[in-house]
Image (cartoon, rainbow, N blue to C red; front, side, top):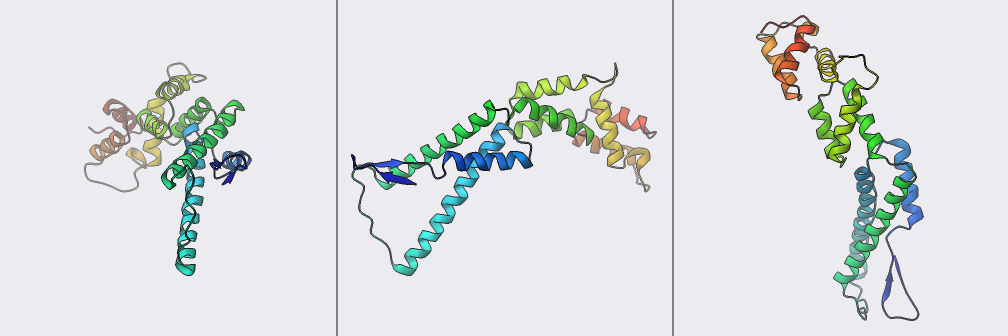
Length: 216
C-alpha cells in the first residue's frame, strides 16, 4: 500500500488499489449495470472499504494468535495521519477513475437519466417517483428535469406521459376494471394507491375512468 523512499524517512502513501485495478473493477460493473457517476463512485469506495475492513479483521486475528506486534514509530507520520493520507490517496484514485469513465463516455448521467425515465414509465412510475429515484442516484436536478421534459419527444401530439404511466400502473396493480375480486370502496382505495405512487388526484381519476371504473 505504501513504500518508503530511500531518500526520505516519510512513507510514500499509495492508494489501496492501483489505478488499473480500480479501472477494471469500474468496467466490470458498467458492463453489467447502468450506473450514474454517483453510483460508480459508491461502488469503488465500497470495494476499497470492504478490503480495508477485511484486512483489519485479519490483522486482529493475527495479533490474537501471535500476540501484538510492536511497530517502529513513523519519523513524521502518526497512525491517524497515515490513515488520513491513505484515505486521501484512495479518494483521489477513485476520482481519477470516475473522471476517466466520464471522459470516455462509459458514464453519462444525462443518458442514465433518460434510460431511467423510459424504464420507469414502462413500469407505470409517476414523475415524482422517477425524480426521487434519480435524486437518490446522485443525478443533477436539472438533468433529471430535462430527461422528464424530453420524454414527450416522438410521442403522438397531445399524449400525456404521466397519464399513460398512471394507466400502466392501474393495469399492473390490477386496479379498476383489472381488479380480480370485489373490494369494498374499491375506487377510493384505487385512487389512494395511485396518489401514494406519486400521481396527482386528477391524473388518478382519469386513469381509473379510462379503465372503466371511475365511480367516485
